[in-house]
Image (tube, rainbow, N blue to C red):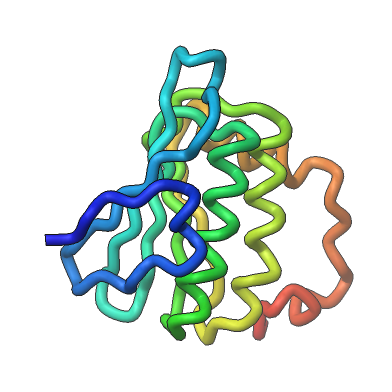
Length: 144
């Protein structure tokens, strides 16, 4: 059984066995207390999946970047950030999604986002709306 962790210990979460969860609660107020935040880390084969639940605010965003960095340091092939359970976000929180982009360049299969309709997709679009995409996708770590 894996123990829940807080953002204070999120810098180096253990890589869970396939099917195991590590749950992190972002410290600080999230979305005015309306939607608390949590971040779950699981593995699916050689993919680490980070699920953001509730609100993606500045505190949850900081936790997300720390967790994603620790996950990549453990050497998975791929990192997925799942935003389908997101209920709300702030602009500061959405910026964390862009901050995670560089981490994907270190992985053989890169970084992928899981979204549906609603706040997860909206946060991702907001995060990348002012980002210039280079003419050559390999500059982002895309081998195409």
